[in-house]
Length: 273
Image (cartoon, one colour):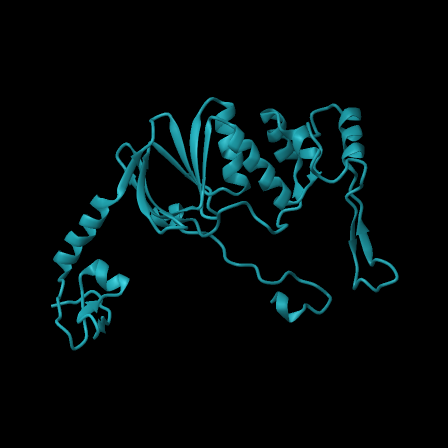
C-alpha cells in the first residue's frame, strides 16, 4: 500500500465535527487519532479527474490566440496580432502593470516594429525628449570629481540625422528611444484595453499546460479568488518569462543560468550579490 499524502485534521470539540484542512479536504483524507479515511492511488486519480471535470472549460474561437504573460513581449504580441486582424486573449498574473522601472532603452529594431504597428510616435511622446543625448558615464562614485570614462551615444534627433544622411541600407529606419518600462507597459495596456481585438485578463495565472491534438489546454487560476478554469485554444503562446509555466509544462529546458555579478574593478556592495 502506498499513501500519496496526508494532513492532520483539526477536531472542533464544541461542535463535535472534524474540520479538514484544504489539502486533506481536496483529497478526502483525514489523519490523527480521529476516524481515518485512506484514499489509494487509483482513488486519488479518480478524485483528480473529478476535480478537473468540475472545472469551468472555456473554448476560444479557432481564430483566437491565447497569450500567457502580459509584460512587454505579450502585450506587443497582442498588438501585432490585432494589427493583422487576429483576436487574442492575454493572461497576466499581476493585477496591473509593473511598478518598477526595469527596462530603460528600447532598441532601434523594436522601434522599427512599433513604427509598423503605428505606435512609435506615441511611445516617443512618453519617453525621454528627443534632443537629450544618451551619454553613459562610468564613475567610481557620485562624489567623484569626474567620470573615469564615458560612452558617447547620440540623441534621437542626432541619430535620425545620421539615418537620413546615410541612406545606403546600413542604418535602421528608426532611432532608439529611452523610456521606463513602468511607463511603457502602462501605455501598452491602455492601448490593449481600447482595442476590440484584444481581451486583456489581468489577475489570472497559468498553473499548467498541455498539448492537444488540435491545440493547447491551459489551466488558469484567478489570483484574487483562487477559482480555477481550463482554457482550450488552437494556439497558445508563452510570454511568461524565464520561469515560463508553458515552457516547463512542455518539458523544454532553459539554457544557461543566473548571472549574479558582472566583472568590475570596484568593490561590489553585498546587497547586489
